[in-house]
Length: 427
Ligand code: UGA
Image 1 (cartoon, protein in one colour):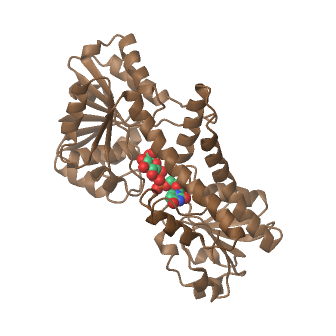
Image 2 (cartoon, protein in one colour; image 1 turned 90 degrees about the horizontal axis):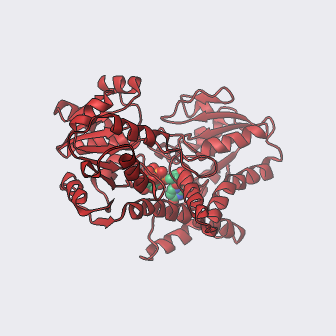
Image 3 (tube, helix red, strand yellow; image 1 turned 90 degrees about the vertical axis):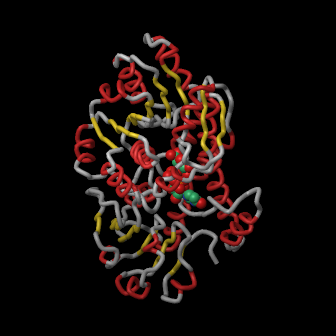
């Protein structure tokens, strides 16, 4: 099948590469010339494990192409995937500029054959119905296209694996014919199908992310309570996880959730509920817990150091989670902002992210970054932070405070090196 994937961000590139690997002829298009030039030269604009290998392999096989000629490619392909960004405004409403541009490009392309338009971008309930209506209002005959909502559930850092091994494939459409077409695209994948309406598919995506965010805020609230009762939170999480109705995942307490999805999607679902005069009490509570989670650690630091003014703090981890270079709504950066506000001098190290941020000093070496530090804060759970030489760290630092923002370090080990360990609900 000849496929056009519009938008070469995390979702678009992974979708294109995986579809090509499944044997389809895929053309990834983007209006960003520089990005496409780089992709044509073999440079991958994001860090995503396994993605480069997949792109190189399928380019060689002649199944994966990159172009800025969006209309030319669209004209040729019966399948169009929309994978453009859909950022959320501060009030939770969605910025649909990129989607509107895609609609206009489809309209400007003289369509002579049927198009199955598959939306993978996360869009608020009702958006795909609106896309359908917009295309008709702009003059495209309804017999010439179908819109399918096919949200994706891949995690950054595991994107290729997740797309190759989905738990489910959600398809929403107005009729069954386009569903059958999309099923043929995925025939090599083994996953149950959930077939629903356009709006139903959109809602599943938001419900999934909101539920996962709820799990995280729940365990973070439990951690606060456990802290007060001197109870180890991992014991609680492990016990909860054995209950099949709860499941063991997304119960890691720490600095809270960040990234390009959970914060914006929970905010957007709250907005969508309020648009219908529903007060989403739980969604608001989930966000409140998450928003105040960083302050919990700041308070613990202040408790120990009295003032953060002029203190040298080293932050390990800048990405919003390990195995990605994505820093969107990273908890680490939010924490750094709050530390800077209190007058701290910030040094930072991340294995992949190399920011230019004049207010902080970025180091290329993790041990260099801690020289003379009063406190070390682990903000992202990169594997290399789990196996450090604590004696060396202690010798390099001036102070002895270790803030474990992801509860990944065994307090026993670091306290044996005379560290003062700050986590949440750790014994
Ligand atoms: C999330 C979902 O997990 C994907 O299913 C979904 O497709 C994606 O959003 C999306 O909507 O595109 P992602 O944002 O890549 O994926 O990352 P997650 O692994 O879900 O982590 C999100 C945040 O939650 C991270 O900041 C992570 O550190 C935090 N987290 C996760 C916790 O604080 N505790 C946990 O137990 C798990």
